[in-house]
Image (cartoon, helix red, strand yellow):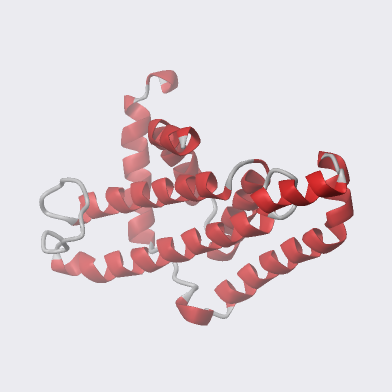
Length: 195
């Protein structure tokens, strides 16, 4: 509970880091694999719920940035699109689909990474306790199953994005990327450690 609550206090830092990632990695396939892989690595050492909370807070942060720019009120994003300019609505829907797919890749990554280590999933701890395995022993004995599953999951991520299966494969428009870059520059100019 405290780890998930701590995400609230780190959300600005996480949004800053993931904004840099989103700006610098232009390929949606590479970005999807990166989100899935980072989520897998994090969930191998943290609870999957905590990693999912990180991904959701980052996604909501991106969505708020764009919704704020696209709406006439300039306020915090909500569920109501009445304030969104008509010419931004299609772009907003495309961005929602873009974020949904990234969050789903990250959520699948948490499952892929969670099975790899002793602390990744609660049942792993139970299995290791009954079998008398330590952290390294668990990883090594499970690797013949978990590593191919991790690789297969990342390959599925690539294929789903490449072939646009199940409504995946939405790209971020250049106009939207420019808005996020402009917002990132505004945030950087307000941060004291960049001055």
